[in-house]
Amino acid sequence: MTILNFQDALMEETGNILKGVGTKNASGENVDGVNLFAQNLPIVQSDEGDESKFFPYAIIKVYDGGTEGDDSPWTVTADIHLGVYDPDEDNQGHRHVAIMIQRLVNRFAAEPLLVRKYRAQQDMEWAMQDEETYPYFFGGVRIRFSVPKIGRRD
Image (cartoon, rainbow, N blue to C red; front, side):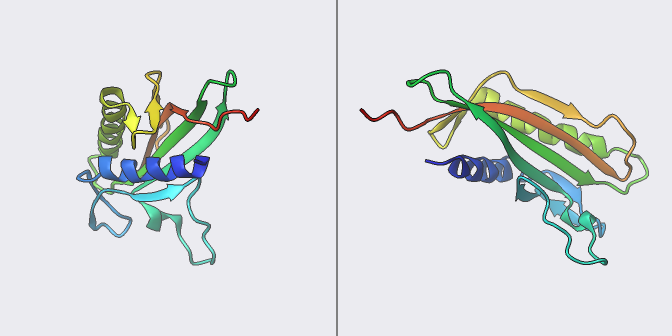
């Protein structure tokens, strides 16, 4: 079991949780769900490249881990960064982000197990942007998980 297995499982579950959330991409087309990325958005390779093509997205970042002792599991901090594009002039893109945050928090509060291996702790945090970035809107969730670790060998 590696940290990458955990990240992959969290990415897959995030995709499932956010299915059905309707947003738009930067071309103005209706989109169901989000594009999933591990750690960061892909690097734009050309001068004509545009990061807006990645919207809507969820970036699953694994930040740190720690353990208290030989028999304790890892406590791993994972952030799920959300970005949506909403060109409508009613400026309601934050509503899409709030719905995504609520779905993620509700899922792991009600059912803390992820693939029967990783357990979400109940001290979750969430945040939404505090600056005007129309037509782009951002938010995120921080969840700490208990992740099994290999025991010591004698």
